[in-house]
Length: 299
Ligand code: CP
Ligand code: NVA
Figure 1: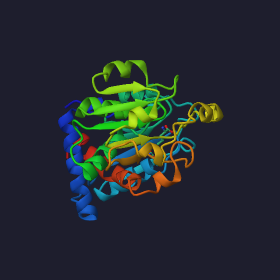
Figure 2 (figure 1 turned 90 degrees about the vertical axis):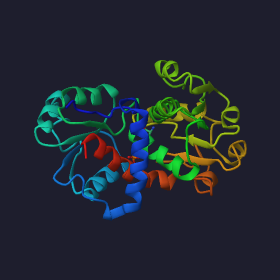
Figure 3 (figure 1 turned 180 degrees about the vertical axis):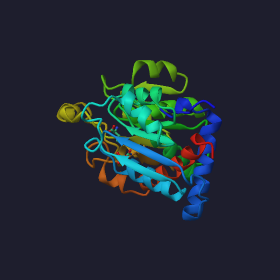
Figure 4 (figure 1 turned 30 degrees about the vertical axis):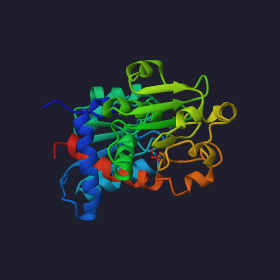
């Protein structure tokens, strides 16, 4: 059987994504009484970037399904001292059943997958954050039902989370209106690949108008700390506030992968307001990733 990796949403079929959403909703209802489908399975978590949600949800998810997760921080493993990813991949594959990796570049997680003989899950890189999208698609479904055919809006940076939303739009056939400042658009190859499901512009109001959901993320992702002040200037006018939400559909929800920076990409009142579903998104990381692990491990 070929090893299934999950480096981007394009590694799954649309039916598999729908299956994960349904199973995640089911696992959420079952809570701690979910069957121990991953009993005796082990997971290595190679994290080269900070995390609260992703680390916690993978560790707890594995434990809830009866398996064991082992966290390898950069400071504790030999990677930081120069052991190549390709060697780490082969060593870990001899011991664990699945590798979860959060790293700086898509190249690094692709190398891990290229040399691993067990599934590799991308827990965020510079290009994608596909695990976030599984939780976000579950969250939209829970609050607003079927996402296919709907229109959602991404306001802000054309970053890793935006790229994953674009792949989601392509896979599940919904429309994603994207508004970024000039120079902060998503990658050109993804714009081309997803062109039937996205619209691109620089006006947040145009993008938000009539949308069933408004989504944003930090203006400076991990690794872009030095660009923070330049970005704050470039992104002025892209804060998702009550005025912008007023242009969305009447029952529109607000989504953000977190961590959020109040007063920058989102106002305090929107983040804490009745339309915000950000805490559900955070919780759903747990359930969506359990469903993903079951799929990749054939359970
Ligand atoms: N949304 C998300 O991935 O959060 P963490 O960086 O805390 O894992
Ligand atoms: N775009 C953000 C997401 C954090 C979960 C980053 O890459 O830092």
